[in-house]
Image 1 (cartoon, rainbow, N blue to C red):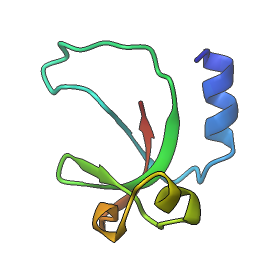
Image 2 (image 1 turned 30 degrees about the vertical axis):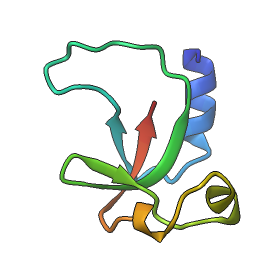
Image 3 (image 1 turned 120 degrees about the horizontal axis):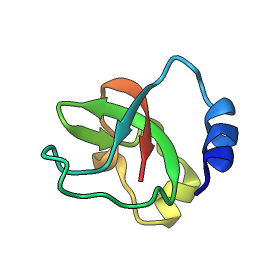
Image 4 (image 1 turned 90 degrees about the horizontal axis):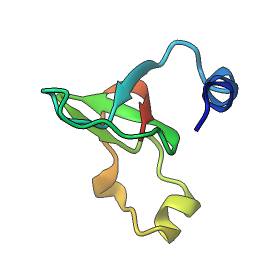
Length: 75
């Protein structure tokens, strides 16, 4: 993903969401960002905020939904 692509996707999202990244806390893992999505963040955990039909088709359930701060996750 390029900076231009990331900016475009982020501009489409709620600007008050926090940003989290999928990585280890020591900074030992670096990867290109391949996707971004929205959800909830709580205590080093990221999960679905609203379960959609698309999520269900991909195998997610209510157990994958968590309460927390609205967030954008970089994968």
